[in-house]
Length: 235
Length: 235
DNA sequence: ATATTTTTATGCGACATCGCAAATAAATAT
DNA sequence: ATATTTATTTGCGATGTCGCATAAAAATAT
Image 1 (tube, chains in turn blue, purple, brown, cyan):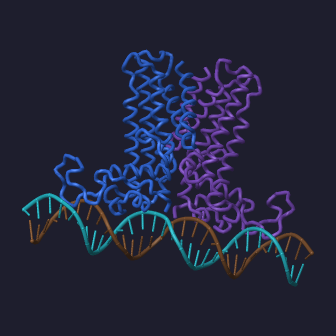
Image 2: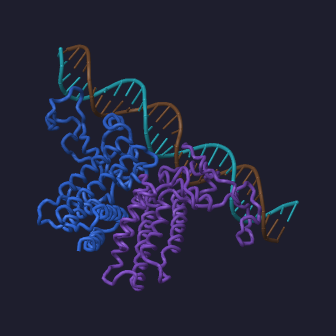
Image 3: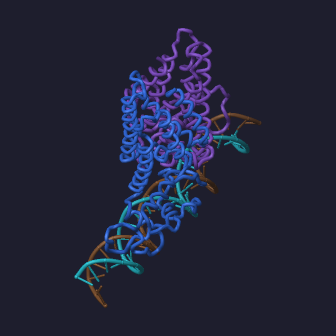
């Protein structure tokens, strides 16, 4: 019902009504029946943004069908029911962030300094939290963490969402604990410091940024908070 | 639709069908028309728990009417529409927390040590986040922060919720900045420390606890995190 | 060409949800 | 007692929402 024209799929490959057989450059020798008229990945991206902005319960399958141009039966044939669709969209989101963190969170080069790495990490998160999609910030912005904003709401009602929520927290914790243990081994932090505590500081600040961003804090607001904290933690 | 018998109002004062005129010990000389058959505060408490568990969009006025025994027209006459009801329930929640913090967050007595005060603060928050209502933890538990879990979801769709969210964040920030400024004046933290940074650490950790609690972290899990952090910050 | 397979289109049915309107009930004011 | 005020009860109407079932369309296999 709400105006969601902004979500209409652009004419990307695989987006037309009849798709050029070779267009979807999937190596597979072409399956048998009628080919899909849409790109599932593009649909998931749109779906992610809708859930991100409006939440799970406030986003109906009709809305999604209208915004993507894919009918409800096609959606359910491809992705399953609403919950499965949500989980697939969130998994894509998680992988996107995770991939960026893999690149940023490495302390290999011995000339890296820890504070620089951590600042780069927060740059990534802040960009994501303040409405950055693929480089430039956009109009009908998605603010905060897509997963936090929606999963905290739904977790008690959906076993599967709860368990993804737990898994995501654990993944973050584990990632940073590994990182700081390694950083300590390489002498970037003193042996009197506790990697677990450092890790908790970073994940806590991260969740705080997500909340503040959702409430409309600007990129500079968040940067200021991060700078203050990192200059305290890594003087 | 869901089973919500747990929310049926107990027979508290003002809960029966015809209320004893003097029972509601409001000093006011008794208003004119037919007296209310329910206690608005008790209703708000129930409503809070429902929104807390299920979120705003997943809680229908029919559910609320069934759980409280108050019909929809009475609800809307007393509280306004669904959004207004939500805001009133959250305001009650905010005041409840705020009142507890007023008691806990004082560094008057010169023998208070800062770490003790902060630990008491986190005790309050952890109890609230892990399903404590009025002292004992309950069965159909409300986990995490009622406001975070619901408002993050709804903020972009509801101007009013967004603005309460911003206000709540500012209130927390201001509270802790005041606290640490005063603590510094009283010599509890060195003059080289930055009250703003300390404040950010505490609010960040708080939001992190809320998230973890919603994901099912136990009281002890959260205490361990708090202890590790506070012993680092206030050695 | 015909059959087979897969996707898409259309639409129905059951139910949920909200806001509102009209009638009824219970108190105080005069 | 009667009028007035405020709450409650009952129920309707419009719309939203989801899952499913059936028919049509577009491709490949034989």
